[in-house]
Length: 129
Figure 1 (cartoon, rainbow, N blue to C red):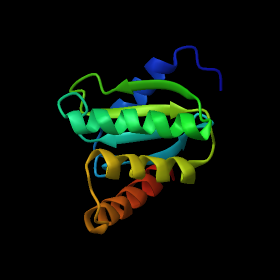
Figure 2: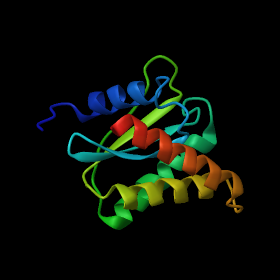
Figure 3: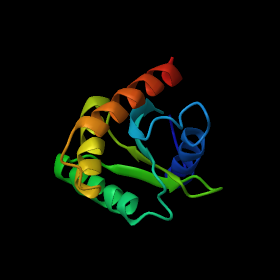
Figure 4: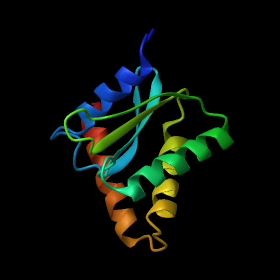
């Protein structure tokens, strides 16, 4: 797929993820457009922790040699963010997203995050079918 404007494509992904079908997934990664979309439904515009999570994810992607093709937030509320990545390794990106979350939100326990991740996986699987 040829994409002329990756930023706009990321904004469209964020808008879609912000919708009712995907909103229960707090964050995660999924295939889209031959790439992987990392995302978070976590109050990006208003919450410094969500912004830090994205910056940490950028660093993790750089360390893994993954190109960031586009980044955007949902245009209505700025609550949901999406990052389009130049890879097809959904599992790796999903691990990076949750590692960035743990670091930014200072979560050392796995209880809540494990629960959120299981909900995210179910939501993503249903949306991608």
